[in-house]
Length: 93
Image 1 (cartoon, rainbow, N blue to C red):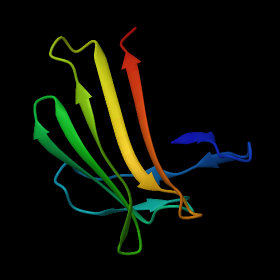
Image 2 (cartoon, rainbow, N blue to C red; image 1 turned 90 degrees about the vertical axis):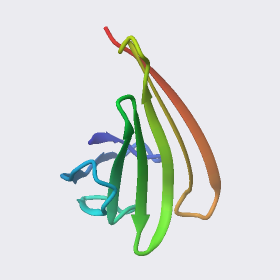
Image 3 (cartoon, rainbow, N blue to C red; image 1 turned 60 degrees about the vertical axis):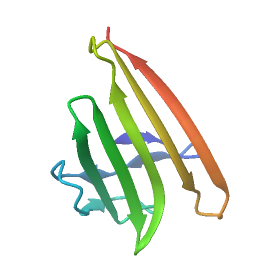
Image 4 (cartoon, helix red, strand yellow; image 1 turned 180 degrees about the horizontal axis):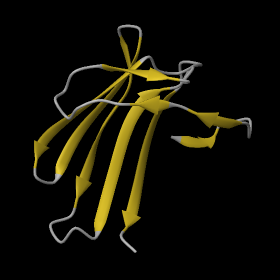
């Protein structure tokens, strides 16, 4: 994943794992040590990020039945302890 942090600085981290709900290591991230994805059904994944043993982000990614839209909803706690919720909707081009 490549992106920009809240200070406008570039970030890069990498994760390789399976969709089995087990924790797999993340490299290059200051906010998470592990990430897991678990397939719930043909359209839904459950996402969990952890720093140490503490869950920092949890959420769901759902692909619509027609495969044209993906909705990702997450809740978590930022490094300063502030709780947040985010929903992003992606349309297939």
